[in-house]
Length: 448
Image (tube, rainbow, N blue to C red):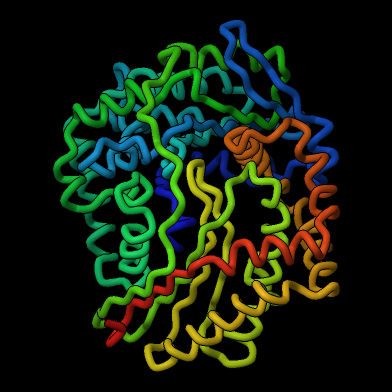
């Protein structure tokens, strides 16, 4: 997983075995089409003024809820990256009168799935419960959010786990490439810091740091919520107050400046590994940019994840240089980034760089063909429904739309936006993004 797409996710809870089968069935929700989903999305406002987007479905006795607080690891104190990451591992490690073991037993007994995660721009949570025990499950969620204990033993246990994971990645070329790329692309900006922290910074983070982040960054005014499942608006409204009503009204967020990624660099590092990681980067687009959808379609043609993309065809299929190759248009809240990359045998690194550079330049100067554009739009429109094949995917989508400041009817309009992209649009945006100064980074044996 690349730096740009990486999130710090900790999933440590599962439903009791007896409930697991029911949950598997329950995740096959009926929102098989974006249009159906759009018709079903409603905004619910609690008596306390907390808003959520809801898709009600009574076919299975399950409720999934995703939520996020704007902010995330970009809110880590200067000099202490990793606070949000450590916090994400601790909110279900004891709350109120329940220590870690007791809280986890209650989660299992009530068949509640609960996890937290942090990206640079948000701190999120994911919750699922049988509808018959929803109020009880929401009560546990409220306890985790509003009264976490932050006991010494769980803090040290989770810190050790995170440090162990980071130590295991220290010689990995992809990890090293991510660190070098991040520091060079976003110098003196929160995006340039490691969102997971480092062994050294995690060692320096104390209970007060975690508690301060929790007390100031998780509030009702920077909260977005998506809910899917066996619950009506009338049933959900008071549960929103139960889950989130005890949080502070306003978050105290540190301003994060907008930034243009620093590119046009040639970077390399030597590691004693047989594989070389390669990254290309240029400034991308913010999500609100009018050209974003055209960039999204362009990226699909270039290297956006299918076996027919130009990069995949040229790097893997024709030359066998790598198992995987990708490109991505990444809209952070405060920066747009275009990223492409692969990992290959060290003796094939130079050839891989040349092939990828050539494909980026070809797209910048020529754009896609009419046939490529038509194929990309057909795929992107048809594939959109696959994002709605489970309740957890739908609730996550509801949160994602709100974080991106997109309208509640976006499910209905999105495919029309894709269809409206023209060849001139894609050629214009390809030149705008790919003709910009490009950073090329290689990390491998002899790369320095």
